[in-house]
Image (cartoon, rainbow over the protein chains, first blue to last red):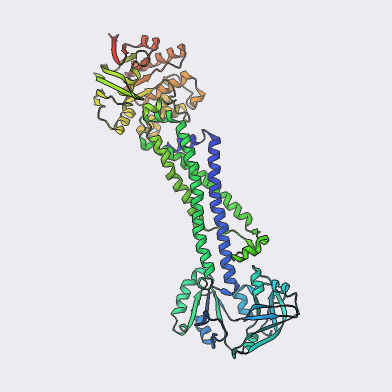
Length: 407
Length: 229
């Protein structure tokens, strides 16, 4: 009975009902859609961070993170790699790297870069570089003098495929080490900063240049699912043969990103709250208007013997339908909006410099999280009914005699 | 047997800074099956007395007994129950719930009483037929004339077999022909089902139809003419 009365009562004033429904729909849509955009940004930040040489877990020499000098390398990585291979979950990949700061120079320009010596086939399964080459080719195992650089660096140096690039750094004997490489490939990355920073050579070429022999700077691990990070890390740290090394998760390797992500969670919650508060005023106002227009009707209901609690249920039934319709339509709009943007995203190229500073890709793709959708719907529905209690209680408290005499 | 007893009932309202005496000590007894009119000029206290008998308002002093139940110390919930089970109301205007059909309006009280759906439907249709509204079950109040709306209100008031039906100026918004038809119908209900009707009115026609006429003036009983043999 309450639902029948509630449903019919909300359509007594279709215009007013449409206005409040529009407010709820827009509120729900903004909560879910903007939440999805923010999650998409966060997800891409994580993916970029992990793909840009971080991986899910890295293993270093104990002192490497404090001083990433070539002296703090893992001298004999083979036993460690053997242990890691046994301990990682199925579907995992890992790659050894040498990573040092260096100066890149050609006839026209010189600039600081990070030289990354990689095992090409292994690295292709772990980081972005395997699929990122846009011109020329990817590195091969036997590339003693081949180098792959970023498009932005190539533009900056006014250079291209087949041209020479000299890298200079310090070797393990503290001498200047330099080597001339030939550009065999040019890669593109999500962020221009990445293209300018990283240059890739083979592990053997880097090791030779730095007199590292078999030594490496790091072992980067990519797991099949990021949710396995905590468990895998605990396993690696617990292995006796790995105790002399430092195993860290991506969150510790990218502390700024971790801080961003924590801010995002808080921001999403605050956004939900602000949107809901704005919506709540509309719901309360609309319901109160509907109540005060029907004072005599409530007097009639009470005179017929309807108890106050039944009147509250009837008014809440009206809010129930408004919230239900608003939530359903808002959700549909949100999912359609996300669907529309899933292929092409939102292009921030015009704001690329600013967005890159924050670690955001040039194109944003929204990402819907089930828990965000559930939270948004629950916030609107439950708190919507809660704020509707105020007008419902007002209606229940009308005195029949006074209400019937109301003009 | 007395269905209603009022013993020295007083009622005073606060209007601004003044106290207005609506009832100054009214005592009366109404027998079961009565067809009684409380008549008097506007402001005489007849509606106030009706509201107190129906449990919509509370007397300041005195005692009111409806079908053996003393209203004086009842809680709001108990009064609501009394109105639901024992009292039917017919108001001057705004009698019906606009979003419900004639049938649903009549069913409404039985629904509040917890009557099963099938029985509700049967009784509601039957009573609507009795009041001359057969075939108009699905019409909403806006699609009915004033007289038809009042018939639905009367049907709703008596469908739950109340002890008394309190009608406050039921013919005030009707033309004389329609008002007469309504009165005849209520008289028929009174005679066939022994439902006690108590009217508050200043309509001559209602006064003429009543078998007992109680005149109220300035909150006091002025006259009491019992025309029952």
